[in-house]
Length: 246
Image (tube, rainbow, N blue to C red; front, side):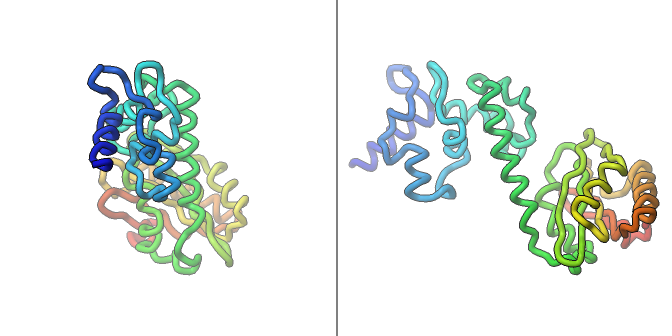
C-alpha cells in the first residue's frame, strides 16, 4: 500500500499539479522518491531524462515545479540531442529557464561532449582504416543539424579528437589556421579531417573538395600528413582516401 501511495504522489508530481491545482514541489515527494535521493541510492542510470534535468535545474519557479520545467524542455526540443544543441537564447525562451539555468544546461552537455572525445577506443595506427574512424566518431556527428568540422590529430603514441568549427545547415566554415594550430598544439605528425553532412548525402561538395585541397597543401608545407577526410551522415560515410580524392 505504501508503494502504491508513493507512486501516486510521484506521478502527480511529474504532472506538476495536485487535486487543488496547486503546483507540487520536490518537497511534496516522499524523500526516497526525490531525484537526488534516487540518484544517490540507485545511481544516475536509474533516473529518467526528466529526472536528470531536475537534478541539474535544482528548483522550479513560483507556481511551477521543477518537474514541469524539465518536462517542458524535453517537449519543446524533442530529444536530449536537440536540447544539447540549443543555444542559450533558445533555452532561455522556455518559461522557468533564465540565463543562469540555461548556462548550467550548456555546461553539463559540454562536459559530456569533451569527455566523449577524450577516451578513444582505437590506437593511432588503427585509424588509417576509414571504417574505424567512422565507428569512433559517428555518435558525435551523425545527429547534428549543422556541419561540424573535427580533426583527429595523431602522433606515435596516441590521438586527440578536436572540434575545430561549427558551420551552417549545409556548409562547414573552416580555416587552415584553425585546423593546423590544433594539430600543432596536439603535436600531430598526421591528421584526419572529419565533418558531417546533415542532409544525409555523403558526396563532397565543391567547397569540401576545395578546402581539402587547400588543407593538404598547407599540411605539406608544415610537414603534417593528411591521412584522410571523412564525411559522416546518419547512415554511413565517405572516405576521400578510398575515393581517390586526396
